[in-house]
Image (tube, rainbow, N blue to C red; front, side, top):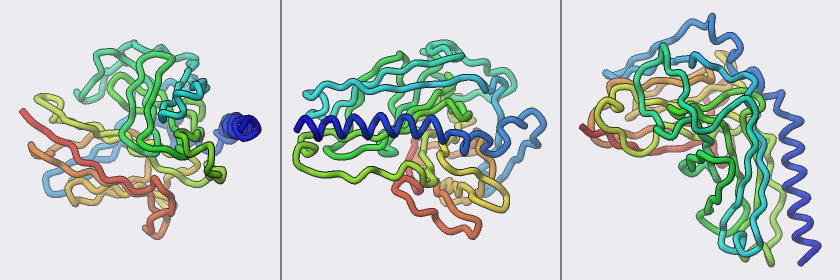
Length: 276
């Protein structure tokens, strides 16, 4: 049992090192560096408008590191204990919202989005947290820096991607190391229920790992209440014109031919609610 636990620990450390060494592949997604000169695109279908935007503060030098220190008992109960270290980014502060549309904003300020197996994210406002998984087994954990209005920081050092095995099944089962090098699309926003003025401009945001978007290459296919928008830039988008009530958002990573890219997280459908 001791050898097996050491093996798991070694795997997690290896993944952390691998993640740090390979972030350059994600550094220039969709011209983040050229946001100031980018021509903003707006698309409209059946009364729903999707408009790209670039935040006034890019936080190009912000970074995050993550470590796990869960006890054996916590792992038995599918609890992951996380510690974070951030540089050039302060959790709890309000992000500059000059020149962007009014949208839902966290009163507790800037935070971390922690996504386990592409499930709805946990918003973490401090540098340590305990996150519960939905089941025993091997899990992929993505954590990234988020502005107070929930848009992700999209630079090469603003995220961590790791794996961890939880639950008592880890004592008996043998899990192959997950592939953390393939193209991955993680759903982030919108999420939950929006009320009042927050319904006017709803943030659409997602996180890409190991893949760039382009006009002639990979794209994100966004289906909003059945209306299809093909996105070839990794940036935040505002959705306007959504009706009150339930709305359906579906995101799919597709290749240059429009075919879904294989991967457990590359197609996600969520429902949100808008009310007065």
